[in-house]
Amino acid sequence: MGLEISNHRGAGTPLALSGNGRILVTGGAGFIGHYLVERLARDHKGAITVVDNLQRGNVANLDPCARDIIFRRQDIRDRSALDEALRGCEVILDRKSTRLNS
Image 1 (spheres, rainbow, N blue to C red):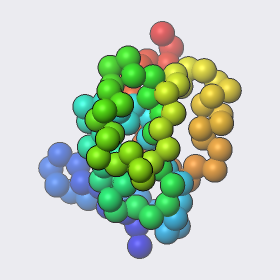
Image 2: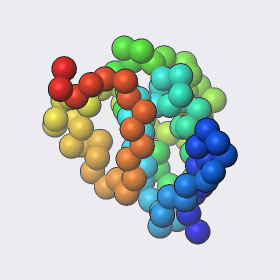
Image 3: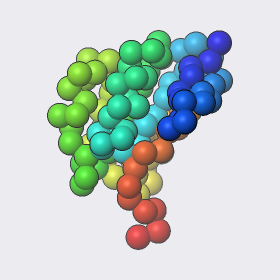
């Protein structure tokens, strides 16, 4: 059984997670990302890590699910920090607005 996330047309895309798979969400404190994180926190039984540098996001957006996630204020362009955040992740959901080549 996978977690199902709908796109803007309502069509679901099942994510193949092994029940408690760890999810990393980049840009999870942003306008779109925080809705995704809230849904994951409600429906997913595994660990959820959110990485956001808060240039455009706001950590207060995550208040409704703060107890259910791990939040890391860091820039994903910092390779060592990204490597640490990725450790053990089964799925990465990219909602960041930072261009990696900038």
